[in-house]
Image (cartoon, rainbow, N blue to C red):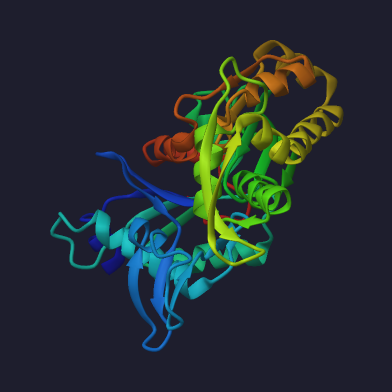
Length: 347
């Protein structure tokens, strides 16, 4: 009874709990939080020092008693306590301008398709511990399809490739459910690691995650571009231990990430191979939709289209597609009931 009373003064939230970024959506303001899934903790006092962007700036730069923890790994919770504290921080931040003393929001949270029951329970428990009065779980590929305004409840196939930070999910959706899917741990982080490995092997220079991500964003591509691009990369020389800078171009970065890109394309083909022929005909007509941060890799849509001979479209603002899909569900309880992940709380 108290929860319901407090719930009247709380904002219902849609949360995309990603490996790299956490996004929070409210019905009245849209996306209110888009911050890295990082928490800085003082291990001596167990005190939370920073969450989100402030904590991300500390990655790789902390003294021994401070740890910058990434509590999400490949789309699932790897550190329950830190995830709970991070969620509580975001819930309080959303309600900071309202008069709610104890927020008790309804939460819709995105989960990977192949999540286990134990991992699903961990997400629900972390959300409830952070203040949620009700928790609804939705598969991220389904949320991405809804965010792209695809007709997910109709008897027509919609193929979504959601390339996040830790996982890539390839799903064929029809009649409000996932018909066939592939989930793989090759995604944005894999591209970053490929770049780190390439620079180490080619130049004997060790670079950090943030530098690798910057290289990927600025000059990364899946196919040759019209204009050549290059940038300076700085790191530690592995031979003498001193700082060193080298120039890398888009061709070298394309070579570095080619294996990961090809693995995603190969899994798209494998998913199509096990999809019923009637649905494949729909996909051939309607195309494949890309979402997630990985969809922003230059030329990836063209590379997939060339390999599959199927049109490929990038959804509007792919980074926020999943959370916008969950945001639609906040105000459409009928659709939520149809697409809810099995085992979630009943409406």
